[in-house]
Length: 102
Length: 166
Image (cartoon, rainbow over all chains, first blue to last red; front, side):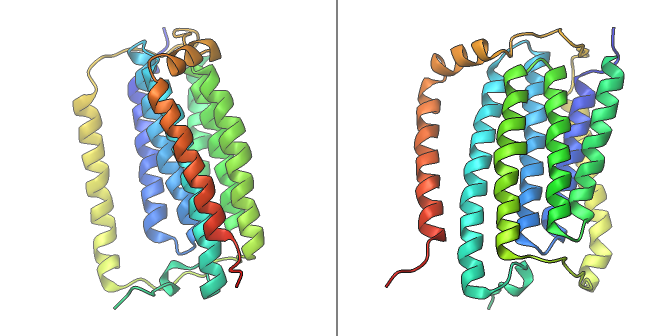
């Protein structure tokens, strides 16, 4: 019997979630911020698949597929916005994009 | 065997994830993210999610990362310089991070009840056949709604990224 349980997968998921959060909060490049968001979504997917295995139920994997689909749609739209932004502002650093800052 | 596989690929995933955040150049971050996606695909395989592991490699490590690298090349984004942080950030960053970590540990500890162990081959209902049956029977409406979502995303990306033609 292997000593690796669902708990260990939850710990891995928490670690990835934290790293992704730190990335979103500290990086200035919009592309890297989008990558950190992908990290966070992947942390969610590990949780869903681990619980799917623990409960012997496939619904968690179906949810993970929907999360992957949403992540792809989000990346496509986000990068489209980024290209439009770069065309107008000539920068990809979030602290230089302060159009709405009063 | 399962323990070794889990430990090796979990450590690779975490190290690559840290590398995504600390690398100054976006291309290095993108390559590290491919490492995270690949090792997570192995972990899905350990959990019995065969279809999801394949989808992870094809969709994430393939399509999404190509999109990211393409945009990085297109925008010619160089290495990002670090800026000095304000006083509030220097004082509050570490305590808030520790609070978040403590909260996460508490929630995981609280919710986690069963002590189910994960061993390879313990759960074999993640084949494409099982996923397809669930997707096209019980989850048919969400599946169709997702296709509309993707259509909207494609249209939105085209409208946002095209050149203004007067």
